[in-house]
Image (cartoon, rainbow, N blue to C red; front, top):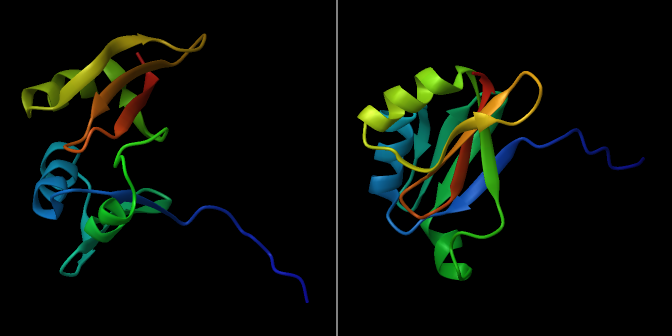
Length: 120
């Protein structure tokens, strides 16, 4: 029997403050909290789960590395306005990425890169 790898099911991020990260991902980005333990949380992120782990942050330094999580949106401009009004800190303003799609990049509380990708 061979081991079959079916795809990515979860992306884990090391976070320095679990409460602040949960608040950001639920209140600012509108993700649903699925599960929370003392130093770990799982959120709905579409077809995958987003894990937030204080233990992972303690085990690795620096916390934010060469990782970017891309969220699909209907309108990058509308999402940019809405999330900016909720206090999101944008690193890059909305801009054209492909012939039909735009992208805008923001930071979570630990400096992880998050991008919004979709129609202008």
